[in-house]
Image 1 (cartoon, rainbow, N blue to C red):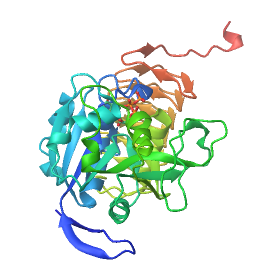
Image 2 (tube, rainbow, N blue to C red):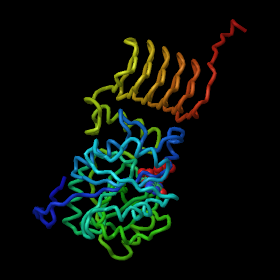
Image 3 (tube, rainbow, N blue to C red):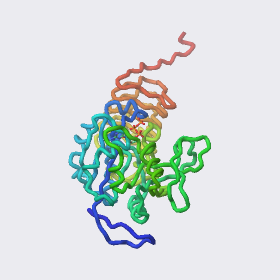
Image 4 (cartoon, helix red, strand yellow):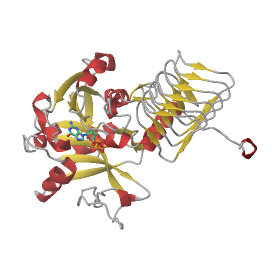
Length: 375
Ligand code: GTP
């Protein structure tokens, strides 16, 4: 597919059409999402019924992208097993694997010889852990209109203290890339989706790790290149922490953010066909219930992710949590903001709250209730 982009200031369309390349950075180890990422790379974790990356590919395809290069490193082989040549997703997919992780900038440079774009044409680059509802075509159009070296999607957050921030001038020109600060000068942060002029990618050094955020962008600014901020406060989430992952999954299930890859209409829950859910169980808040999951009588699952083959026993309460593949939550147990690793077993009446993580295969014995009259 080809798309037409506005290339003239003032919004006129130049009617030029060309295919669009995209690079998705999927080589990180996803440490903040452990133990879920011990065996599976973050972009392949199931989110609302499909691997997270499927939502990104669907969005790219909808924006007119027809060629995607995956920059892989950690557990690289798993990507090709699921996505193949990309035909099912409407894109031509290629894979490039780093022998050693090259960082975000090094990974972009490392795939340069796979791009189809001419030197002055745009290449989209996105982090493989960003769920964004922003208008990618508008970002591309701004990039063309401004003839920028790089156009970065920026989002405004309420509290920027835990992010590096990106001040811009009235024309949208990026002024600096600032480290985290207790008193940030702007609430605009880098949203992890860039449009590069292709020849700029060729200028990133080869053969070593490079951070695009810490090295490439500041160097381009130092060389007086035009970096433009595309500010759009659409839905945006970095799914890299358990809390953000669960929230994003629920938002997809409920249709708060639209995805062409969602396997069904939006609603209060997405229950896969082979799941066995008791009529006397309550599932809501955008929960996802995977294949072959069993949810027993009087169990409550609110705003959570329950992966394939897991079991939620009677009277258990699962809130804002992730229950891993084949894990078991015992009768009367309570999870709130917890991550339960693959195949582990939370015994009856345990309470795991506030960010608790259970490693794969761990068995937590049941909590026995003893009343004083028993002693
Ligand atoms: P954490 O360990 O939890 O921080 O996760 P991460 O390293 O996967 O994520 P981070 O936010 O640091 O990286 C942003 C994006 O760049 C993610 O989509 C990563 O997969 C990707 N990424 C980070 N480092 C590399 C790398 O060395 N090579 C490649 N190909 N991708 C990378």
